[in-house]
Length: 241
Length: 151
Image (cartoon, rainbow over all chains, first blue to last red; front, top):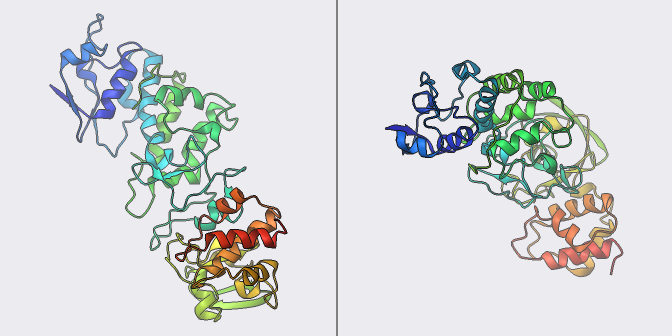
C-alpha cells in the first residue's frame, strides 16, 4: 500500500487521465498526512495496466519541498513529462501565499485558509486598491514583523484575468500560456518572472508565522523553466484540488 | 540616522531609527498628537496620515518611507480647521468619543481629493478600513457628502 497526500491523489487523477504518467512504483512520495491508495485503487483512477513497464520510484518530497526537474526524467514521453512538471510547479501557484492575491473576485484572501481580507479591501481599477484604501496604505516594501503586516515591493492584486483562485492545474496552465491572461508575457518571460520577481519572492519569505510556498523560488523557477523547455504541455485535468 | 521629511509644510530632520513607525516620529519626536495609536497593526485606521497625498497607516509605515516626502497630519489638513470636511464634521456633530475621527477625516480628505463627488458605496468602500467603536458611520458618511456638496 502506498501512502500519498491528498493533493497527490488529485495529481494522480490529473495526470493519469492523459497517459498513465504516474504508475504504481513511480509515484512521487510526499511526506505528511494523506490518503492511502492501493495498486487496485490506482488502476481504478486510470493509472494501471496499459502495457507500460513499471518505472523507478521518484524521490520523496516533503510537503514544504519541491521535486526537481531531474526527478521527472524517468517519464519517457516529453509531453507527459512537461505535464507532470507543471503539476509540481502548480503546488506553488495554488498555494495560499500566491493564490490569496490572485482572487477570482474583487477582494483578496488572507491566511492559510482563504478567509476574507481584513480590513475589507477592494481591488479598484488598477488592482492597487481604492482611493484612501490602497494596498500600499498598509503594506510596506518588506514585512512588518511586529505588526504582522506582510509586505514586499509593488504589493498589489493580480488582475482579474490572472485569477488563480479555484483553478485546476490544467486551467492554470492554459491561463499561463494565454497572453491575454498572463500579462502579455512570452513563456520565457514567465520563467524570468518566476525566477526574479520580488513580489513572487515574498511567497517564500512571508514572515510572521505564515506558511511559505513549497520549495524555494529557485526550485520553482527551475520547474517552470523545465516545463517550458519540455514543450509546455498542459495537464488535461478538470479535477479540483 | 537622520531622516529628512516635510511635515505639514515644515522641513524636519529627525534623528530616529529609520524603522521607527512614522506614527511615533510624529507623536513623540514632533509632538503632533492629533494622529492616534489604535491597533498598531493597520487594522483600525486611527493613525491615518497622508504621504505625498496618499493615505498611509502611520503605525506600520517606517519613517524611512517618508524620507524626502510630504507628510500631512490632521494638524496640517488646513491652517485653521476650516477644511470642508472639518466644517461638516462640526456642523453635523459627527464625533462621539472622537478617538478615530482624525483618521476618518484624513481618509475622507484623500478620497475627496481623488473623487470629489463620491457615491455612498464609494465612501463606504474607501473608509472601510477606518473603524469607529462608537458607530458614527452614518454621520461620517453624511458629513463626507456634505463636504462634497452632495445632498
